[in-house]
Image (tube, rainbow over all chains, first blue to last red; front, side, top):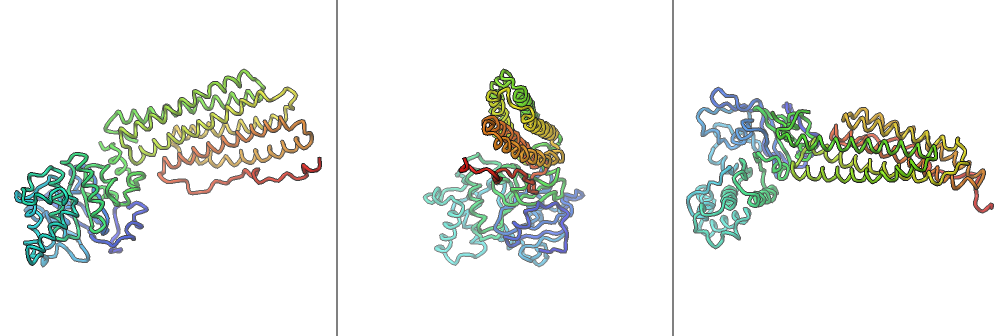
Length: 273
Length: 240
């Protein structure tokens, strides 16, 4: 953590404690993101700890998804998009020109709003990543990775007898867990989730939330969500974005009982005009 | 504070506050009547206080129901959540103040006309102080004014001090003449009731502070009620 760069963001009082308990995983300093002329993120600095869930909340267009996508350089795929400033994962600048982006995206997995399994067998969906990254020497090793990943995603019991069936034949909630299994299979360090439950019913949502809670023992998880209740339920840290800036960041428990900033308060209580 | 996007949410919260204001008004009236009844030994008025206590209890239940329903429907967070939790707690303190007023009124029946007025004066003075505290704290709550609440919270010290001196005074009378014991005991309970009302007012003050600032009041309240550890000098039951 670079203490020399001051926060411009309000940080809730308990967050230093939360930060101190965990190693820092992602550090961003003075990040700006532009889409052509549009200044989407303005001088954003944040420290995201490992082995915790950090939730990004804020109204549509506030920049939370844009920043999430900057963490594994998904924005590179948008030609008009430009990112400046520093984003460092475990001391390594991820915008370094020598960095292998494919390797980065294996380290920083992503789960999207709509479940998007490959139109292939359940087994293949999970095996694809480990195979292209050469993580298994033979079929037996690959089988182990597939089973472990599906188990971690809480899906193994439901699909173990139909691994050859297409992933697209599963229910929405199962498909989303399949996508999480696919992300886990390449042994990532960070999992980014962009509204992972917004297309799911409450039961499937509860299962994903339970899964997120288990995964945080081993991963750094960052989740963008429009559901304030979900942020309150699953995260340890919450960051509130508004108009491309990080307004307040800190202990979730405090953010939802006594936020420091009036803008945060107005947004989470449903007063935003 | 600006309005919610969902207007019915504002109405829920406003309704809760109105119910609390009603309850506060009723409890103030009850306390006023109880003190009057005791001072004038007006048993009819005392009975009215005893009867009306049910209304206070009913209001408390209504506040609770409304609060629970609002939590279930709106999933409040931040200040909205504090607003609702504090409403429940304030209602509970007001209900207890109502009980203490009722208990004070009940003691009117035990007062005889022979009781010296000056004995009564101390207790009614405590009553007036407790009333002022209650009024102050209800105003502070209605305005969500934490500074004003803190003032009331500090002023409770005076009520405690007065209680200590009345406690000693009543003990003296009891020692002077054992025939005073029955009446003085009732007065002592009356005084204790007023002291307790002050304590409930300070609870409300602490809740107003939490409502406004989102954290508990850090200072420890200067607790000046020392009667629980007071020894009665010069009185030894074995002498009799």
